Image (cartoon, rainbow, N blue to C red; front, top):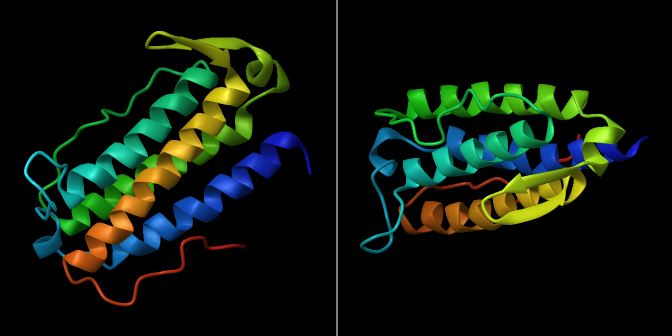
Length: 151
């Protein structure tokens, strides 16, 4: 297994848990936010999948076709967005080359290797997924998935 396959498998195990968590959310959970100024449940999910898609787009030299902040008005729309961006992100990850991993990329005021950006993207997703699990518990979603889904 090469470096990108290992990375993609690791990222995918976390994304599968996110997908399962979002599948358990209903329309009534989407506006929940634990404090004033926090993202809502729906906004946090959109931020997670949109940000990862954006970071992977930067490394893979693709235009980021996904708007990081689309508005969703139902749990079904949120699930569809997660499915669509997960598929697109997965396809881009599978096409990334060693040269793209080694190349220096820019984001905001930071310069880093493509590999470092992908690691940052995964860490960002894991961080916010942990927040989302807490949101889910507080707003009453039952039977949460395990934090990673292997295989």
